[in-house]
Image 1 (cartoon, rainbow, N blue to C red):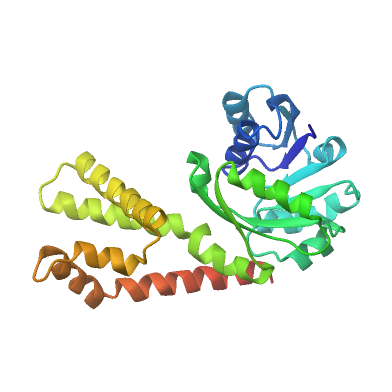
Image 2 (image 1 turned 120 degrees about the vertical axis):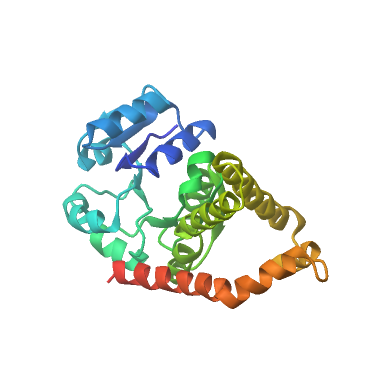
Length: 267
């Protein structure tokens, strides 16, 4: 097996490293993580065991052929030029930095062999939604390997590079929208007399169940909504209020704003 390196050991690196182990892509001792934060290093060791930890990205590049750039876009812009002198043709780079296009990454890192990925935080519980983008500079085998890595923590789709901004708006930032919905539903339940723990559990399970219905049935969400909505019943009364309050347009605009911000991060 080839060694896999991570430059950055934050909340996305840990689930991806764990997924790589579970998928049989690598053994824990064949993982190398560059992370200067001592607390993050301890979390990696506690989670995965015999991983190799270091402080600097150039140490990962020296030891590993496949390297995940698991840092924020602002950080990558700073360290990319420093790393470029250490990057060789043998390296396959996988960037999870939001906003920075393939062309920008290739120029920044001084190599064409890069696959860009937009994951999301539910990868931490094996329920991630990711999209990947590449160009002709990488082989089908390289893209398939990245796809396998991302499938180890959820589901993956391939899209053109320019659509990853929209992916960021929907699924990259999307968990935060849903946490807000769960919290609001829980608040509503508490306002009507439910205990907080029960209200939160009901809200979260309802979101989980509704999402599973969409994925498992393949039906349009509107069809599934209509199945719950009886004439003159409780659901249509609630839906009427949500439409009047602008929930639908607010979520559409949220995706638009996150997409615009992703574009700004790349500029």
